[in-house]
Image (tube, rainbow, N blue to C red; front, side, top):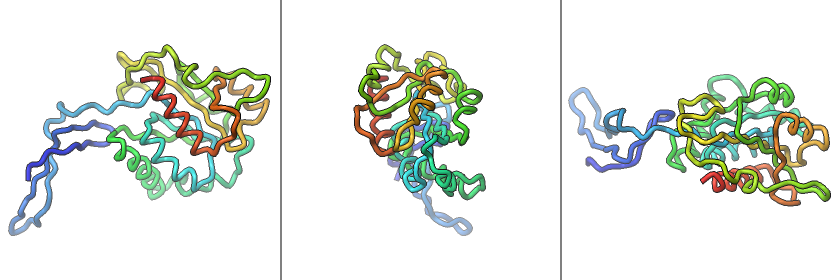
Length: 241
């Protein structure tokens, strides 16, 4: 009774001094637990992670498993799109439907990852099957735009760490504009991860380069989408500090 725990409010902030008390109840009220977060002004503000993810839609089951992972690692926005090697049937995932039940399931998967990480900033999910129009019309400004692709002979590509070296490492406040720098924040980063067969060569890679993306690599191996995303986000966050 009265024990302190860490708790928070989604998209608002968290506190390490929340208290849990047992209420015995009364004639008209059942017994139960009461969680008190304290004064709202004392909540630690939720911080929007500086990295956003542009993801070619993977297999639906893989997409469902990936959502808690990316939320746990930390992303601000996930842009879901189609690539040349993306099967149209992948967009039949129940998590991409617009009805309330599907949106609740999508949010629940993200919140599962946040709970693991002790975070409260729920990632936004933006779905646009048209890669070209997404790149042209819907992306905000970024300090770095990186596209991941397996290393090929005769083509130079830096690692994620090399591409992000020198960027400041202060987080952006959650109320900063999407993709924009908040007060005292460092430049935001957009990381593009293609389908398991890789981005189409040369058409999609050239399109991405035309929109300011620099090619980066984890090596010559072609990885599963979930392995590539987790590895790239981990390296990117470690590089930003």
